[in-house]
Length: 352
Image 1: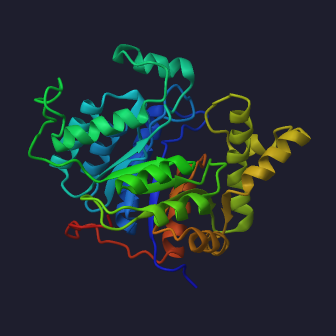
Image 2: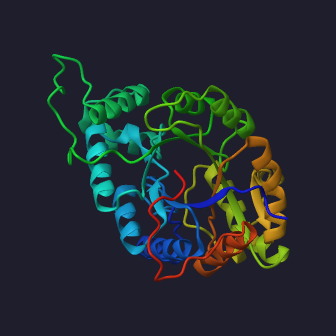
């Protein structure tokens, strides 16, 4: 039995596999996006991370343009642009350009974290004359003021226009792994995406709080919440477990501050884990969905119901690209997506 009707989407970090390269990872993302477009996924978001050998996705705005050009109907966006790293005016102009080129298909997802370590974060921001404090809210407000041309009289930015001026910003989404972003998204009337795949905060509490506190805005009349999660789906339970071993080792390494390219399932299976490390893996498995499409769907069903998610967005840090493609094919079957013919007319309005 399928889950209640929810949209299904992809969050792609362009994972780098051991023995491969960042260039190959980025081309794999283009290939996966084409597949997702054909399978009927709703949207394809790319992440922003820096100085991480395991992740090639460092420039989401560039990848969004490439993916949108290579696909026909799927919405393409950022999951997300890490606003502390960027001048709000630059974000506004880049996403207006994307919206002008691919009208009705672009999403602007914004995150509070820098997506990297403190030193790299400083290198990203040092020419912006920014302090070390959390200034996400100020940057976010500035972004909205550029869009609405609402700087007060006498403000130095009063006459500055984000170009192209006649193109609106695409829909704004706030990303988060705690209750703060949920409350902010509700307060400003934006869409919300919760990062269940790495959050310690309770997904149910955050997503229900967003829905309960939502205030309609000019951009969105009703709340819309995305549940972002990690999954490994395969044709058999044994194969899914084999593939998930890569994620287990990657998680243990990250807990030690090691951000190596993704290990093969064979390397991960042979790794000499300590009892403490096996405990870390067991705890992380609580938020990782592994198995056949029936198993993954059954586990997701309860969480979707509890969070009242409108959409599920899946990330899959799988070593082998062919296996990653297959994982998403099986998820598309589980959610009963309708495949789109390659010569079909692009959809004008996917879910918001």
